[in-house]
Image (tube, rainbow, N blue to C red; front, side, top):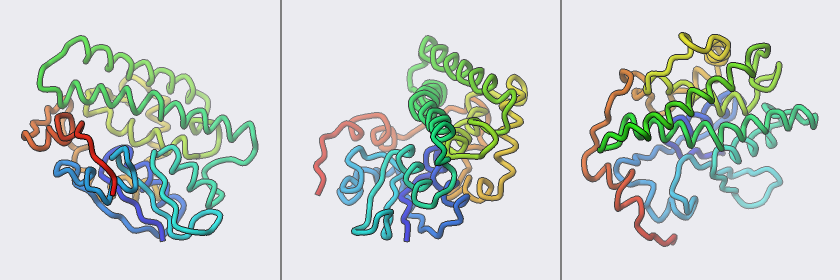
Length: 242
């Protein structure tokens, strides 16, 4: 059995979508990061970086003891390799898919995450930071628009883990008032194509996707405890794994 330790974020939904696309039985183990679940010793034993999601496979690829995989790019590659789907074995196509997966991991997630932070969470408004990260997000959308102008999926004709990695993050763009339908028609068409897949439909709201219904630029007022777990002192405490 696969156990998915997760939260209802774009990164969490990458993995639930992949598992649904693969048709794999799995158990969802939800966490409440507003209460500091990610800092419990038993979770730090799985991921010393205290980030979710984490996958635990009791019947791992290659056999043996259960395997723990964190970082969503690594999890997606692991699942694709184990089940022989969603990642090509033909070298050229495989590396085309992997490079777009890495584009998401290295650029889209980190930089769009900063845009969300400065628009929706930062307690002190910082115009320069907002402009910097929103502009970078728009630049990334233009990169995707160019790539998707003549392709069904990000790396060609085949749906892959690269599409899975990108889709939940683009789903969150309206929260920072960026709208694919208005400005990026090819990317919007791709987004709708992916959204129509039954596995994506099942996996996109695992736990609770209420946050995606919030209005653009909605400021999230966090209490002191939640702020501390997310961005403050609790986030930076020195913790030891058991």
